[in-house]
Image (cartoon, helix red, strand yellow):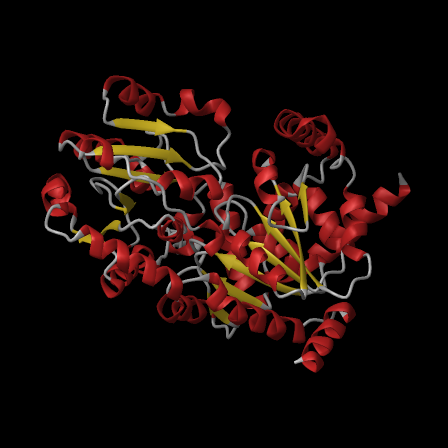
Length: 475
């Protein structure tokens, strides 16, 4: 009991450093991390039920005590231990695969989603499904890794702040979609009207761009990264490092189109329920796009992100489910893990990357002009040419540069079936195979390792320092 009391006090004391520079962030952090025991208990019970259902009794029992994963992290080893902390992302999988291939790294994944444990266990040395955000804070406080790599995503950027305050290792934070690039997020008056989750994301971004040992962006760093550094008046080290393709997931299956001569399109990723505000979520509300494509005679199949629990799909996406029941050339399916997704996707002709009808949607033009969505690399792994709107400038430029797909404007969506016929499909497929070699994780992993070494050299952690020197001598 007293041990728990002092542990909680130590976490609060270390987080109090945030209060000195950003009181608003500090207050939101205290609320987010379940210091109120009743709230923590409710979260733990809920998560325990999910883990039991998803993992079974044997695997569930292995995650009862966080001290066990701390012990594994802190057990002496001749390898550099990297802790990946994630919310909703597959970004760390390829990194882990190729870090481990060097023979110099062990990787530990702290993840919230229990439904994907079997998949993750294939590619990490240890996988731990945490019960609460407070438990993550404890693990970060008690662990002595070489690097902590937080993969930020919407509602999870605060983990970077927690890691920076509680752990002395080099702290790397990945930004998928910088919160300040969302519409009105950079307006203080508008931000105060936003939900607390949005406020916490934006305040965390500001803190991390000033305090983190390194920032990894999955977008055009030369443009987006420089703007963010100017915004926060910082010189934090930046690395552009999207979710490059891994040859582990390269697949080539027979196409559905071989059976009937029709054209099959696939989409895999985030889909926002249609009852959410269109002006905010319109870019991922795809029911109107689906209707346009199937009305042209195209077959369009959608796979929801596997991070979503399958339990609520029928309730949240009833319009997509109903469309599936009524229209034979459309289907809406549960999400599947990356290894199975690339195999299934390879049966299609084209992948829908980023095309949608933007009527009423408030888009941050700068954001969409610089982003590189994760699914782009999933599609390349499946050998698929992609279809993207020209409004998504950076990714559209990559598609044009490598000649791996079709770039269209929004007003051409209703003519897509005719546009597809103008392209040499076999040439596009051959270009995809060449592009995925250039955009492969094995080709780029050394840039990440060098970035880790730079972050580690800034750390006060003696383990980190020692491993950095060992690595330097080894080279």
